[in-house]
Length: 83
Image (cartoon, rainbow, N blue to C red; front, top):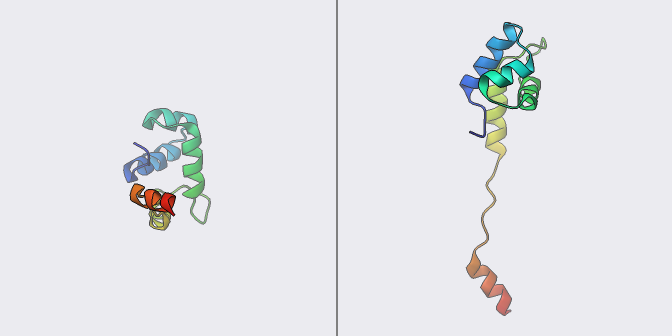
């Protein structure tokens, strides 16, 4: 699994409230501690607390900006090679 899920984000919020460290959270949900650190930074609300919904909204907003790069069509390559 490449991306954190909404459930992962909920777990992070709960574990932070229970005073778990980033390393402990990472071990609990099977991720790298740096992933947890980045996640916490992007999910901070106005008062500096991590909120799963803030992080989820940020994730969804960033995903809408992603565009898949089309693969190069080999027929096009053959055409340009002949020119």
